[in-house]
Length: 76
Image (tube, rainbow, N blue to C red):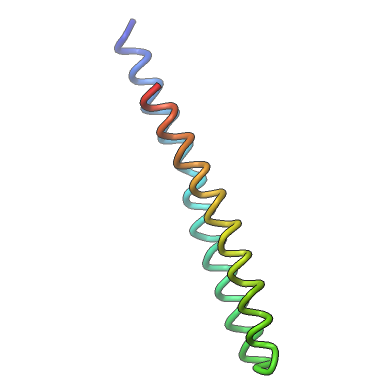
């Protein structure tokens, strides 16, 4: 019985790490959009950079939550 529970923990932790893929894509979208916007209107570059940093932080927070959920499933 213990082997089954350990197997389910590995599967659950693997499924929880799928959120990391979404975070990686989100970071790419944020910085790609920032580059396009800065290239179109360079006078707003500083304001756009602040918004891009906020988007980056929020996206990374979601990725870290997914990673922590995987660790909780695996080690609890």
